[in-house]
Image 1: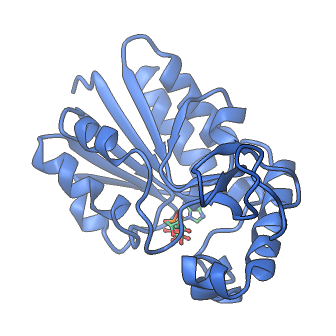
Image 2: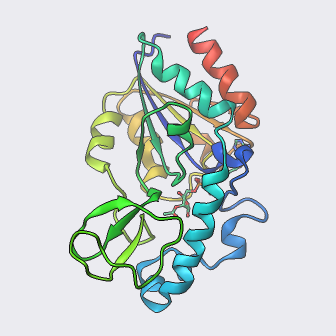
Image 3: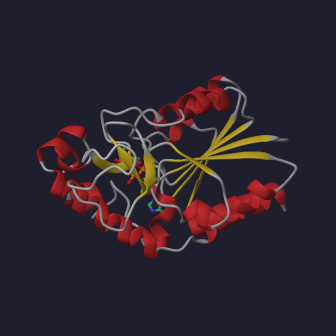
Length: 230
Ligand code: OAD
């Protein structure tokens, strides 16, 4: 099959072997922290110290992590001139960029800060705190530039347009439990794309894909890229 336009959606599973925890696997982040307390606007309003503490710790972990063979394989595919490959990630780490890829961060980035009042964005310091002032408007309403539950993910118009014209859609290391990303496979399928899931084990939405490949991303993704581009 000739797949000129390729769209890859990644989730926490692609970064698991780089030492960054997933959310819903056994021992995952949402078994140790309350999602409502640390990943909603209401949680931030109730206890900004706790929320900054959670993201400061994740930022420190992410800063030490290195991309694995799956991130590198995707970067190799993105460099291949025979294909037009877009990477959309739900991850807030920068491991795709560290491997040399360009990625749309639909759930934001740990390494960026956002002013909740004027919308200015800048590189986050290692430690953020509730009293930090926005460098543009000086208001002390700064927050991590990550998308919380109940907020609109980034880049959705561009992603919708892309899913309508992609030949191949591949979801890697994502449980398919969080919308809108979980619905991308149906959108791509509806527009005629071939859909592949690469995951440690079949996700709850594995049946929505034409093809599933199971195994650790650091092994399964390079093999799959090799098959595609040799
Ligand atoms: P999840 O933790 O929900 O799912 C991770 C998936 O990766 C699971 O299906 C695992 O089986 C799989 N997995 C684990 N290790 C793997 C490995 N080595 N190789 C391949 N697959 C592996 O994470 P996401 O689907 O990314 O959003 O979660 C989606 C969103 O929910 C996140 O972006 C975050 C979270 O709450 C927000 O915070 C807004």
